[in-house]
Length: 181
Image 1 (cartoon, rainbow, N blue to C red):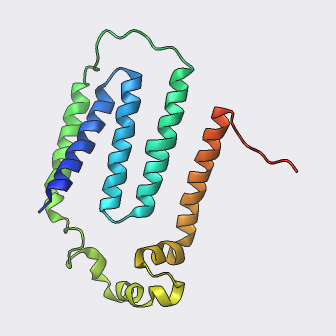
Image 2 (image 1 turned 180 degrees about the horizontal axis):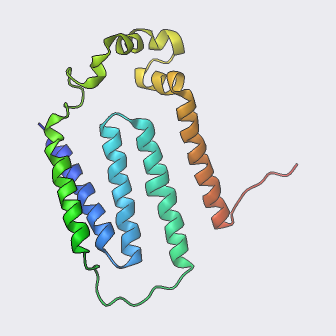
């Protein structure tokens, strides 16, 4: 059974996604898309994926929003007759059907942390991480040990993406700081 927090978070993400698709005002779209990215970051954190949550918050809600706002500032905004786009009815029907199919599978997912979750299908691997995470990595938190020790290259790749996005943002802002010796 889903909790009230999960239901509210799901409704928020769904509402912001639909609003992003239907709004016509570009500034409003950027703001709502930033809220969507923040909602997704919370969703990933709730699913105990802190590395993905931090990347989504930094790139999706942070850097992407800043770059889109900068692009908007450098362009002109046309006068709008209506606030929302007219939805494409065939696309809406296909989306609705896909949504219903996906929603019908929600009851098949185990609850977060449930003992019957698929992660427990291979107890030898899971047990190895639980028993040896500290001995192998000397990191007290098991999640951090897996991220840093066992998935180090993946985590390093995510850090490179965040770093590259920060450099790109500084370049767009024309505020790079270089030390010359």
